Image 1 (cartoon, rainbow, N blue to C red):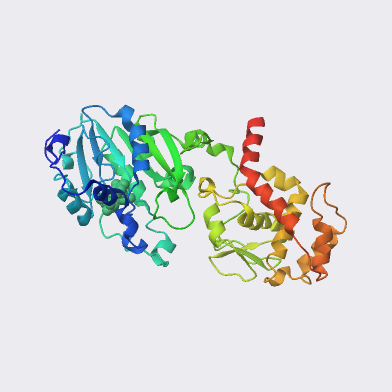
Image 2 (cartoon, rainbow, N blue to C red):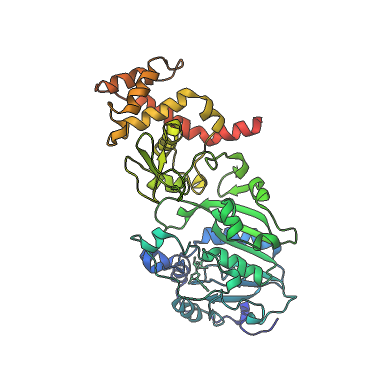
Length: 449
Ligand SMILES: C[S@@+](CC[C@H](N)C(=O)[O-])C[C@H]1O[C@@H](n2cnc3c(N)ncnc32)[C@H](O)[C@@H]1O
């Protein structure tokens, strides 16, 4: 290893900054920035709790001769995690690097860590044992709502090596660590990189051939006190260089731990709507009109269903998808799930959960979802009491009775269609309870299978 740009503990000049202020600047100073100024560089600094999590995970793998790299160091949240090791500190943000230099890290350097990635660039030899840690930026640089929404961030204005380019900077960072031949990688990144099959294959690419996930601890994005919006799962992931690599099946069976909980999260436990209920707007040759005049806004995952997955009686090309009469129960299920499934970061990046067998066979559950959807979407023409679909349902329901101990949804629906005032509290409670218990029910069914 060359001594060039490598930072050893006893070479650090003492910082004159008050200890408290230093801590604040390192871990929390980005809280002050408005979202758009965090820019596409992903300036979300890491709180000490999560730095410790990474440290604990990677500690058993750090040798006295390991070189610890933080190539997206920000104001240095991770820099004191391994004070006895040589370290390499980089960031593309001049303000962050100036700060680090001023407070005792003269070797911190301004650099684009995704360009000309090689050991040579850092004065490292092939035999050096490399440990990459940190919290690289994550953001989908193609995401429309990030580019165009109120929180639109500035464009990425730096180049990336073509062999590590992907739509998300975080996956480019993982591939850059792979390109460096890092022995150990322990970073925070969205869980979606691993659990969304398309991300896994299209964004991580060769990374999955050379690295194997050894540990993964999931936590909510709300652990970053300055993140807004619906929480999504982030993982502290420890990867070991391993010629066996990993495949998506390995990820599906992987036992992720959950921060501050004894529970584990195993992807294969959960059945989702993927391949069962379409969530994307129709492509050019697919049917665009609905036989009942009902459309649903397209969505990516549970979080986006919750935020944008509303129903409409108007079609909008590329945005809405048509709902046909024979699939009304499936979209009514989604509408009810949208309303009653609790916001929980663990499922946020998955497609909505569903027990297909149950939804296919339990007509009371299906009818409960349909009735709840109709009464809560009275602004839509297709759900008005005199609409063809409601008239047909009313006729069907006349022959049905609710199972014992379940709300009398059929009788109430008849009253509702007769323009009488109906209280739906029991139906709401039934659905709320069903959706709150859904993940546990799935787990139970899986264990019994
Ligand atoms: C999520 S912040 C994390 C900072 C720090 N490691 C922490 O955890 O508090 C991501 C950092 O990556 C830096 N960054 C983004 N793109 C970069 C690039 N191409 N090269 C080097 N640093 C980059 C940003 O400037 C930002 O400081």
